Structures are given as C-alpha cells and as structure tokens.
Length: 210
Image (cartoon, rainbow, N blue to C red; front, side, top):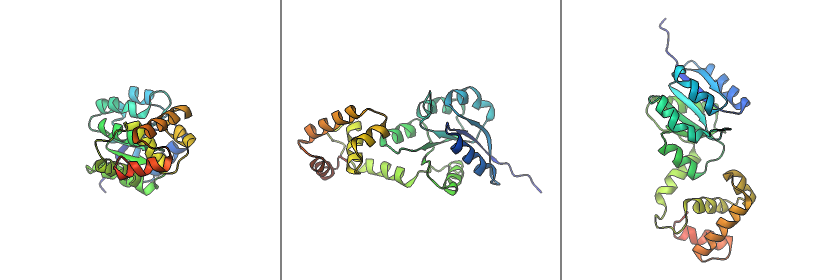
C-alpha cells in the first residue's frame, strides 16, 4: 500500500495545554503530523527552518516577541509555508496587521478541532480560512465610511463600546491601561460632538464610522 505523505505542521503557542491539545489532535489524523512545537517565537525563528513545515499555527500573543511581530521573519525563513494565526481576541487592528504581514488565515482558539483541521487543509488548497467573527470584521471594514474623523484605535474602541463591553474589559483586551481607554472615549465624544455613549454609538452607526 502506498505511503501517504502527511502535511507537516509546526505549532508556536506558549500555552502548554493548548499546544499539547493541538498536537494530539493533529497527530491523530491521517493527513497531518506535528513536526515540532515551540513555546515562543525566539526559539521558532532560530530552529524552524530545519523543520520545513507546510503549515505553521502561530499564536498572536506570545511572551517576548509577539507572534504578529515574528510573522514577517517566519515568512522570510519559510516563504512556501502557510501561517495560520491563532488568537483569543479578534480586534480589527491585529487582523489587518496579520493579513498584511503574510498570514494565510486567522482563527480564534475556541474553534472546534474539526475547524482547525479543515483550516490546515484549506490553506494547503490555496484558501484563506477565517473564523466567522474575523470574517465579519474584514467585511465590515469594507462597508465603513473612509472619511471618518476617528482614528483606527478610536474606531476599534467605539466598536467594543457598541458591543456592550466595559472600559476595563476593553483595556484588558487591548493591552492598554484604563486611563488610555477613557482618554480615547473622551476624544471620540469631542470628534462626534456627543455627550453620551448611546449618542456616540448612534452617530457612528448613522455615518458608518463603525
């Protein structure tokens, strides 16, 4: 019987439980195998070339060099490899930064094992797999008013406010302090000439700023 060549996968993920979980799932399939796992980008950049993976699963938030910052280097080292970004937070800035730096797809970590497997096959076939919420961010950006007075960061914060998130939750998810969030919201109110959260959301939606 002819031996089937498996698709080689490398995983760069600092959470050991997630890393081991993905490794177990992938190695239990007939089509894929994990050639190496790394807990940080520094180790990966120095050794991954010899692993010659077909697909790299890359965590966007890593200790030390962040996954999103390691992405261009990984693409340079392995131009033929496909990089699938894995994230907990699906903010617009990271999505577009990753895609412009050469990511082949973008998935949130709460996806089912089946979806992760399908995504690996999809990038091999030339596709660009994305979680549904990530795809919505991409589509929404094309529908936005390009003449918005709000900066990218202000837009992102207002979108999260519109989703009902508290200022402290926004600060935590965006890795900025609470005072910075408050300052951005204050600027949003000034630019939109409003005095409340509800009015800011209404004004922004009416004008397609979010």
